[in-house]
Image 1 (cartoon, helix red, strand yellow):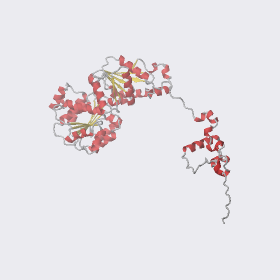
Image 2 (cartoon, one colour; image 1 turned 120 degrees about the vertical axis):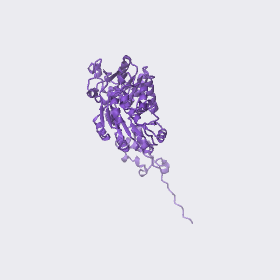
Image 3 (cartoon, helix red, strand yellow; image 1 turned 90 degrees about the vertical axis):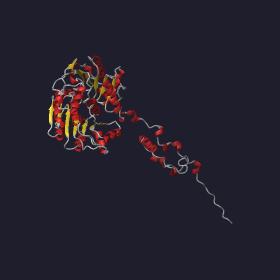
Image 4 (cartoon, rainbow, N blue to C red; image 1 turned 60 degrees about the vertical axis):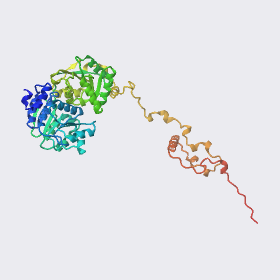
Length: 500
């Protein structure tokens, strides 16, 4: 079957032919006719099988008629990440060379003013992430009542990233008569229930078993002992010993591990870049462009690069961490072996990853072979390593080394402090005999200097002294307690003689 048999317009066929494609993929061959027939479509296929072109090409054919109005897009495409949204824009630029269509991209990290200017002129295709789209809508800069076609790409990723409440709100804002397309590589039960609510009598297209991996990818498990330094050493050995390594993606579960691993590989002489969600948009696009162009052969990334990114020439994928969700494994290794090319995927597995590994093998329906022995072949000393050491290495506390933290003893466990007599400076100031007024009468002595009120317990005296030091000093009247003795002597007045 050729693209000419799918019902696409002449302009679209010319652009596809200029791009070098002659035969559609299975998902394209089955989805395009239904999209052109204005049917709702639920497409499930392996990653890298051309799902983006399956809705891009028929959309271009339909948009040849009509024109856009200000602030009212004709079609809306929702993507979970900024990179995926930018990639869809590239598809429209590639296949829409013969069309005079306005395409707008609404993603975070870009100025609101530039995006608002494009919306004001009117857009035929609006590609957005859910959060930024709702920001424009709440500002009154966007109307969704003119949307004719709604595309929700990577629907399962929307669920993982917590976008489902935003998606439900957006679906209520678009017209009820719109056409809706769902595309994803996996279809968990939660997404299936949402699809039943969003789609009206959809055509389900499943060209492969959900969450299956491509047969062109050689998958291997690599046993690694310990965390941190030992794991990074194992990864470096894999990269140096890889056969026909042109470029490679290295995936980590946590963003801070991405930055740490990138610095470690750079220190060992590798040309490597990093990509994760905490980076600003300009840095993320620069790292991705450098990897695509071949300027940087290695890219350490989080799962932000695991979904839908079209980099056809990736030869190797390294899973530095076993993914927490089994579906992420399918998307990660799907970055290689695309468009019929061969690829290799290596996953580093340590003790404690058995449960996650079992979930992955259960999802893909096949066991993954080991390279150079499984976990049982690891040295015994690694298995008996102290738990505190593994925790320190996992948290990146390399500066402390093997010393760790010194255990702190509780104050009650120090007998020398309980038996220590009070120091001279801890005694109540009024109790020092050298400072008592020598000729003062008992009733004139300062209250704190009376012997009967002196505390018998020296520890209480020290505590009271500290409390008195912390408190605000009372205002003294006259000379206070520092009255000279001669001023305290009684004054005898002589009787005056009676005046004559």
